[in-house]
Image (cartoon, rainbow, N blue to C red; front, top):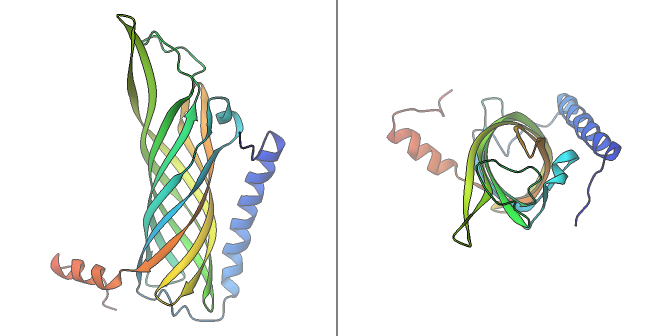
Amino acid sequence: MVRVVVGKEYEQMKNLLLLLLLLLTYGGYAQTDADTIHYRKVYYMGGTGLSFPIGKSKEALSTKLFAGSMGLDIALKNSDYFLLPTLYLLTFGYDQQIKDPKYSQMIENGRVSFYMLSLAAGRRKQMKRLNTFVYAGPAFGLVTEPRGNLVNETIKMENKKSLTPAAKIGLGADYKFPGFFLGAEIGYMHNFRKIEGNAVQFLTLMVGLKSDITSLSKKVTNVIGVDTYKD
């Protein structure tokens, strides 16, 4: 089993993440170089990595390979700032702790899936080809939990589905190569719906590529009659 943070270590990790967010955010105000990479740009991002349950979430959830993400990096008029709508596909191992009165069986070695859409905004700092960034925002999504009933000596499995609001913060960096960016990020997500009596919170570690789709974005906005590229 992968152990990332436990008890006080988790609190220290969360405080460190928040401190880094503040440092990078305020550090961006000292930026002197103009952002020539992201000006009026839209990028597609695809990533893969791991997600780690933390705190009491680990009583029911465990890390599984792999997590995935896909989203857009949309520069605002001031390209130091951006929107970051991202879909996260996260899967965890699952051991049921509390009996569900609607089902006759308890589940061990099951799987829980999270399909979370984050609608974050952020700030970046450009240092030639290297960019650092921070982001924060709300999220919401679908959670599926396994359940089982004994029917005629056969266990019938089904997924219990529920919606959950959440909050997402993170920080990362990417580097521009000819034709693409290579980047990595660490994030923290807190779900406001409980699983097995505990709040659900986890860290996400993602590595991926970012590519320029600005020309496609311009074609789409022209088709729908909204020109977002005018001054």
